[in-house]
Length: 77
Image (cartoon, rainbow, N blue to C red; front, side, top):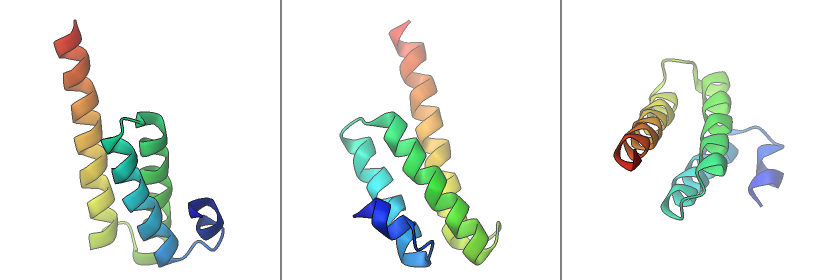
């Protein structure tokens, strides 16, 4: 369903991809999580501008993901 919505490239598709990325993170599908968050970010930046509130939500979440990945690698070593 998300792939079909992404073809439209609208705000609803961006929101759906963002929510899917968050849920993928909960089931530890990290590569897919980052991919859907990135696609949502690109749509939101195009639709609302790079400094918009929706785009900042994606950037904040992406920073959390990358921080979590980095801290997980450090604690495993």
